[in-house]
Length: 280
Image (cartoon, rainbow, N blue to C red; front, side, top):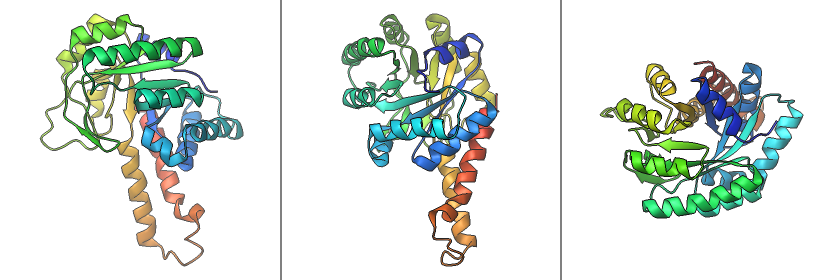
């Protein structure tokens, strides 16, 4: 069933557990993620970035696909359809398309402007029973073609965002989108501990792909209640397609048929999601 993230995130934080946010990129991705979460009986957050929504054909298309798959596949676990890294306009589009949850990313704006727009979106979300995530600090790496340096979350700014009533806060503690470089300095657990002690609210770790399980466990113990995964699945998908093409003549046995061509990639996504969901 489609739900917002409020209760599942609160429960995860209270019990030092985690909800995984899996970015979806097409129908096959969505289907395999839902099937994997359902068999593991774990709630799931399906993340859709603005560029992914465009690739799908629009926010309403994303909503319709997710809603229909839940019905047709008889998915029983809580499913949250969540906008990932949206501008104000992206958030409004997602809300109009009946998304259950949004993330407003104002991390590149001046702090006061970020806070001002977040307040406006919170009021809209409250009326429509939609959960909202905001970002303080900046997550490094490449997201939707925008390259950013790491900017660490400031405690006083994070407190201001808690006070306006957000449901979850994405923090910058050295995490990045995409693959982690060899000279990566790691996560700032001291900062995360301080944020958790002061805020006492669900925190979000973007860039979960490539962080060790031990470090992820530390994050969960220090208030991270939502971990975003995308790159890890994209790589698994690409390698599976590469393997199929290398080992099969595309013109034999109708291997050019998408249902054959994507067979290994569908299996890869399904098994990778199950692996992720059973980590902790």
